[in-house]
Length: 153
Image (cartoon, rainbow, N blue to C red; front, side, top):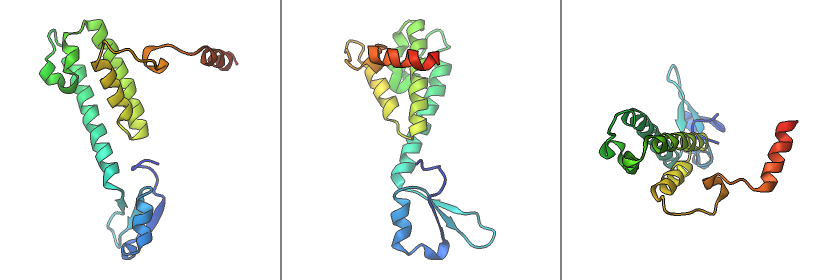
């Protein structure tokens, strides 16, 4: 359940003192109905809001990368945390950008920046080898068979 998902509970403004309100809000978004023409409020944990801020920042960095990597000599300063790609050949920069976009989408869907952080950390250490098949393109034979069966039906 994401911070912007459907509220899991709804309470009136007068019920805010009840412990159940904050207990439910620690699990998922809780709607607080205000009186009159005031729009409803959403009560969520601060950590969820911080996670969304981090993802918003990552999306802004992605847009900055897309623009900067179109320049003939991209600036590592403008690229910020991924400035290490400024010296890479154009083809590798393009592949990095595609991978970053995929990791960003996974992070946005889960409302957790861990996939994106892992991607950047892995790409920042080009000499390091990973045994994880999902990081180097290898697909186990059993998974290949399962995919072939599923895609053929």
